[in-house]
Length: 124
Image (cartoon, rainbow, N blue to C red; front, side, top):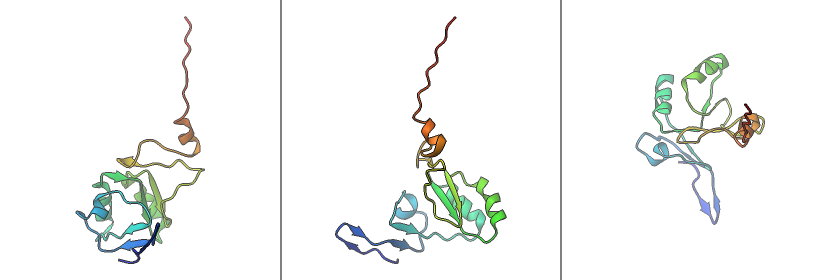
């Protein structure tokens, strides 16, 4: 573990290592300032670990092979997929999770359309 100190309302950013299924930080949806480091023996195990989660806000993939990273995107059902960048929202892009991490999208045109109520008027 790195970090983890608390001073009043301030929580120091914390990184937990050697996280495995069965630990609360693996099985539950956590938010900053906490990062869980989960090891996978290969990309297939990483996909399996991700897909077996009941959550699906986003995936960060770090790679020097951008083409392979792009090809792997379809294997993850999460709402956001970032290559060499942390998962974050950007008002220009739709953002939201899958599974129990959310329903629908916010931000951008897709997010705005969620708040539009269209009315049908039919005359015969």
